[in-house]
Image 1: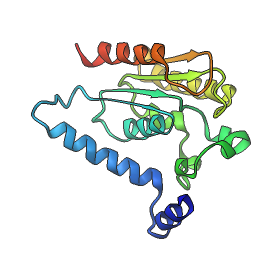
Image 2: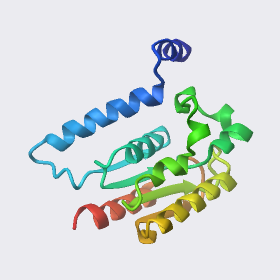
Image 3: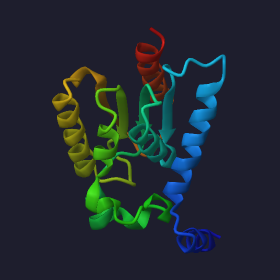
Length: 179
């Protein structure tokens, strides 16, 4: 089924990340319009492919007040040199790697708060490239004068979102969304 979806998207001049970002932005617009929602206090969080979606949505709109990305922060170099085999075709946007890297996309949020959580033994990402992405994000937030608005945590283990990580995300959201 995946090849059929990919071929259909590409034939229509679309990409899967483009479709999901468009859908996420529509969902954000609907959520923001609800009378019981404060549109200045919306956060986004995702794990793995959801983490990628939080990067794309958070980086492409100012409607996200606070973001948390779990289990997805690296560089395109990581995919090129060693991890492409471990990831779905749904990650790729043609031409984007020539223009921006994953940390560059998330850095477009600066100075808005962002948390990234990575695992030190995640088989889907090379730890050296995750740390390279962290360095770029820290530099971007520093340049924006918002060092305190960016946090990157590491936990031992593989690709997961365990209770301690969840608590860190909730604390992050509480700090920035419930003031």
